[in-house]
Image (cartoon, rainbow, N blue to C red; front, side, top):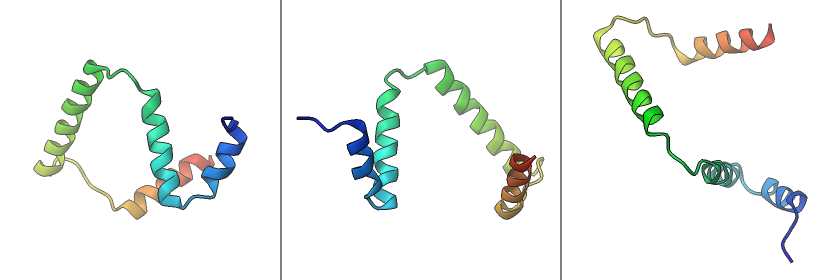
Length: 77
């Protein structure tokens, strides 16, 4: 007999963090059965635009520690 969702969750939570992450990734990917070609193309264009800005020095980069602090502050508002 198949396990119910609560049993599966209990078993999954007993896995290592790496295994839980891999399982979560697999489950999420299984929900995304159709690839939106337009969205994929738009993301590729956006990624290239951002890389070009970074490489040209036209944007100011900040260290991850500072970015994380800013994000946490926004979430706490």
